[in-house]
Length: 240
Image (cartoon, rainbow, N blue to C red):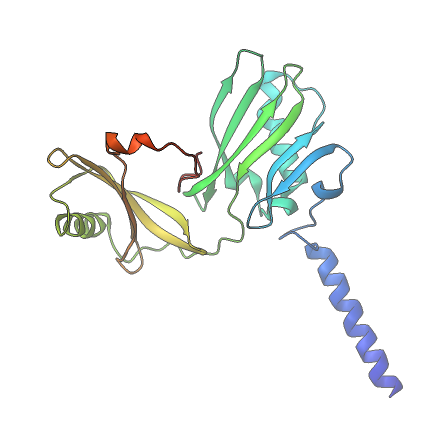
C-alpha cells in the first residue's frame, strides 16, 4: 500500500511539473496578462486568448523601435495567445498614424508562411511611444499539413462550376492558398474571387485544398435596397 501511495504521489508530481512547463493557459507558457499589474483592461475571445489588452504595456519607444517593442511584448506573452514563435506567426501588414500622434501597427497572422484568414493583431502606441493597447483576433492551436491535393486550376474550376449552377459565369482572380478557420475547424483552402457583370457579382470562394469541397461562398456586392437596415457584425476577415 505504501509503495502504491508513493507511486501515485510521484505520478502527480511529474504531471504537475509538466503542466508548469507548458503553462496552465498557454501552449508554451502561462497567460500572465490576466494578473499583470500593468494591465488595466483585459478581455478574452471565444478561443480563450486575449482580444483586448490595455495598460502601460511597455516603456516609451521611438517610432523606429516600435515594431521591435511590439514583438518583444508578444514574445514575452506568447503563452497568452498560445503562440509558438511570434516572429514567424506575426507579419507587419501596415503602420498608420492618426491625428493624435498615435501609431497603430497591424500584424497579420501566418501559419507556415500562409495567411490565416481573420487573424490580425493591432498594437497601438501613444504619442509618447508607449504600447498602450493590443486588440484583434489570433487563431491559436492551428495544426495543419499544408500539402495540397487540389491545384489552383482545379480549385478555380470547382468555384466557377459551382457559381454557374445557381448564379452565372464569373471571371476569377488569382487564388491564394490560406488557412481558413471556419465553424470550429481549420482548413487549408484556396481563396479566390469570381467577378461577373450580368448579374453583378463579386463572389468570394474558399475551396478545400485537400478535398475540393466548397467550404464557404458569399457575394461581396450588396443590393442597395439592403441599406435600409443598418447594423454591425464581424466578417470572416475579422473586420467590423
